[in-house]
Length: 178
Image (cartoon, rainbow, N blue to C red):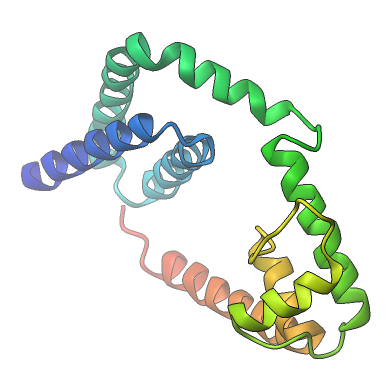
């Protein structure tokens, strides 16, 4: 159990360091959400073990944040502020324009989509794109599936995702350890 705690702590510390050094806002937000969800999920499994892991996690997050916030605080703060910009030159404005273009493609190819593969997407997207907003991806897995496979393929994808999630919930509930 001590080895598992050490492995958990060192892995978490290294991942937080890597994410802070990349400066990726979505990766940092995702890490925080993953940590919160994992801690909530594991709280039901191993209550005594969870308390130790929780304390170690909080301490490591605190230490890592303090160490890296000294040098990276201004850059990270500036990048975080850009999350809330909505002009056409921001990342959000660019993605929204690509999403709108994807919706136009879906409107005309709603049943079975345009087909799989980046070559197909490149050819079809060129017919719909607004100049200056070139893209090979819809920046959303759901829009991507709708564009490429249409409602039929997207429905199958969602049905498979729901089935996997239901099976996972069943396994979690049936294997709870006190």
